[in-house]
Image: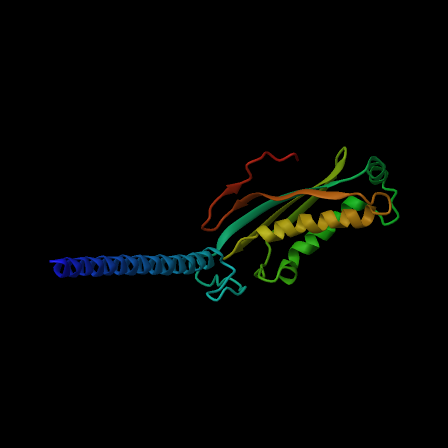
Length: 210
């Protein structure tokens, strides 16, 4: 009788051991599936990111966007920036008494010139035959306000031309006034408005101070 009882106990132990092995196997399989799912999720996320970033190819390398199949449409972009200046520099600009000449006129011309050379300065920009580029540089109480509007009839947008125009115009103000004010800063460089193309009409959410 004792022998039969020991035999029954041994069978029960083996059964319990087999159950534990089965449970561990299922847990390992589930963990492996989760890890594989995580890897797949990361791969899918990278692929989605590459699709969203138009200037990145399938291998993650920088590339110029192919706009060959896009329609030619009228496009427009408006940008702005401000150069914060000292009261002394503002007074000198107002009197046009700086050694380098008329700050506002030179800054305006620098912005126009920069817009026409955007494709040379920003690596992945397309060459665009601009229909129009306008730049304004105006002296305000504590800053020089710079505004630009670029227009083109093409397959791609003209935002970078407008932004580069105000950026270079702002840097020109700094170059011409740095002998008087070395603490100048450029603020609020941004796109104000964009029209044309598949993305439609964009306007900045915060009202301009122009």
